[in-house]
Length: 462
Image 1 (spheres, one colour):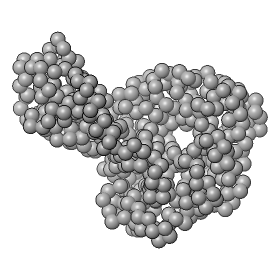
Image 2 (cartoon, rainbow, N blue to C red):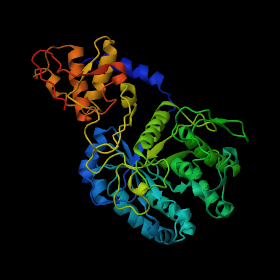
Image 3 (tube, helix red, strand yellow):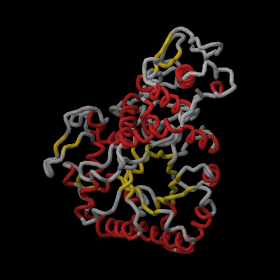
Image 4 (spheres, one colour):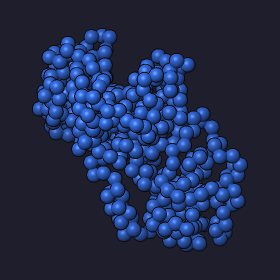
């Protein structure tokens, strides 16, 4: 039996998984920051994204090399007009016409640009660019209209939680009074009229690090905890992230903008920090990001907006060695610059369905499981479960499954167990035998003797 051999089996598994995962579940994207001097080329990054099943990214500029590399990749892209261009964009429509022509229409539609972040956390910009924000957004939108792109590309601007005057309890969420009339209401009016969404950057890590004596780490990391009851509305919160997002919703509701959706454009947890940065380590980063992804991909909404999907961009793709500030700022990446994972977490629904666990690889080394080990299929589980794991390993998992294709060296014996064993082991060795990467929902296990399937030679454990 060659892998991907049964279309009907695949469709059946897909339908079952669609029932198991909420129809209103959200999507996961990743921020691709580039404040570093040791990152792979954009072409290599695109291959990395595709190999990991990441089909949405957010940039912090409109770098032509990056946008060119993304052409025809089928990866959706949000780009950014930087804060330093806001005054020019606000003052002169011809400036935004030229900017849109050079940075958007020149690449669209080969590069799937579907959003423009006009500025980033403008309210805390030390250059006082807040007054330019909404006029700049309107001019960029008008320029998109001239190129007939306004129905394909949304305009918004990421706000930090510092835009809130109150966020606890969640039901008391409110915007800072000095922002409401000058910029919050006009921006939300614009988003409503253009059927766009509010971009929000939310970092439970900061709240936890500053209040670790009051906030439970389990509550911050989406782990099992008693939860927090909001004294104002009686809703129960089981994660700090959901409480933060609902505080934004409460603030929007207080000024009558309940109908504007939200996309979380940044959130993450650092894998390393300074001594005073409590909780900044790889174990916590893997727990936060891994549990957040599971939450987003398997469940809709928040307690305040239970039917709305949660759509989230993780921060960030790589550790960026030239970012200023504390150590944590340079250690938010899911990947090291050499493209090795900082820790293993799910990023797609297919990964979740495969049953692969989420170990931490927190030092970039290649030896979590000591000794010579291999990963083989559990012959006692159902063929459907082996097939699901096999499809993942040979697909999004990136295992080298060429040897088990028809006519290749390991096609015989032609059995689901033999083929799954080869694929599982290929994935396991690729992941440096990290603890938890030989599981596939109970369909695989580690062995210390070389597998014997005919004359097929399995990749060797170290």
